[in-house]
Length: 86
Image 1: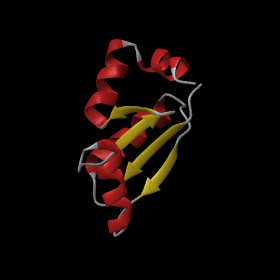
Image 2: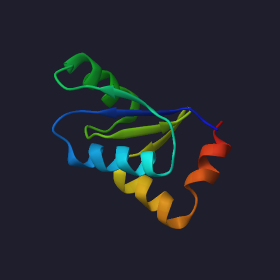
Image 3: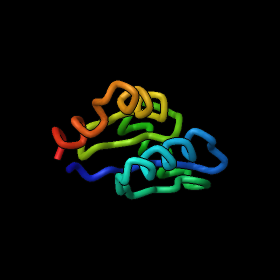
Image 4: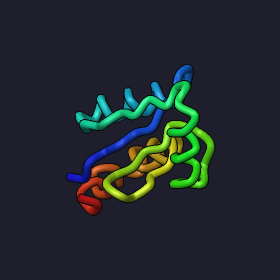
């Protein structure tokens, strides 16, 4: 299974939703809280081209934010994508 990394900030309800979904599926993840870390946010924007959090990675694959994660879960492709990117 791919390593899961999630970039978050506070306050961020979508970050909370994403963490709840991953926890509900027993998917371990590493969280990088970028609250107040302007250099970290800048690096994330350079890496993803996106300004919003959460930004979720399965290995090197950028899933996107909570909406994309939830769509994968609803479609039944979440675990498949995790396995494919390990």
